[in-house]
Image (cartoon, rainbow, N blue to C red; front, side, top):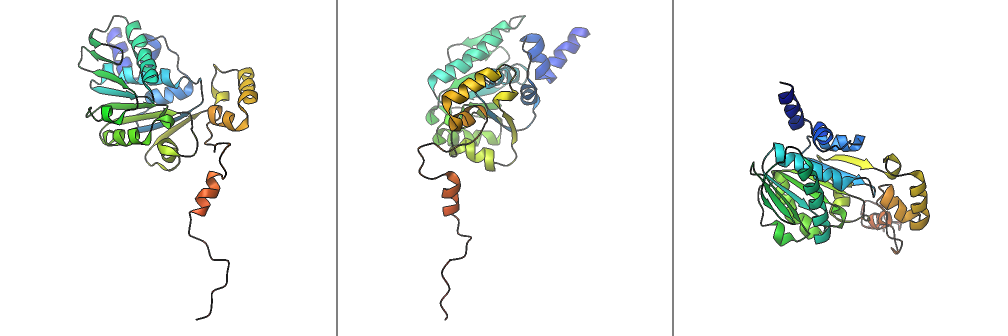
Length: 251
């Protein structure tokens, strides 16, 4: 009975699954993500926060306990393979061993019929897949909008986990973080991550400068230093809800 209880806890609670079967102790924000039941979750994550590791656990738990297709999308082939390698490292650490029907550099199929596929940012490749249970977009701020457009229809019938550090005030990630509806948002800044020391953050602040540091470690959507005008000024220039400064001529 105790064993049945543990197995039920692993299925119902990804945090227990991560702790008992993967020997992974989650931070508070990671626990929030792992336990989220929201259809759409966005993570604004600082560098070195562990977002890709957490994404791998989310993907693996879904594949084991809710069989179906799990898509993991990254900006480049290298990043997609790194994310998939994290998934496989966790999967192969589980005891007893979970048998695989397929195993290659970018996808695997479990004996329960689940597939985990990790893809680079190619819209044509993504369109070849249908009805995923879960779509994870890693470093989403750096994924082209064309790729995001290819993913968007899938999210109507599946869960979406979109995570990245900011990359300026533009693109899909920024627009949905600021204006998106029905989204659970989780923000993690450097000083909140127990694995990032204050000394490291201070070193990065000096090395990167205030603007880039704010983007990389404080979750701020910043304009590039080379921009002639800030995003606020550009947005103000595009509004038409103002009165003209010259007097109206009498009729």
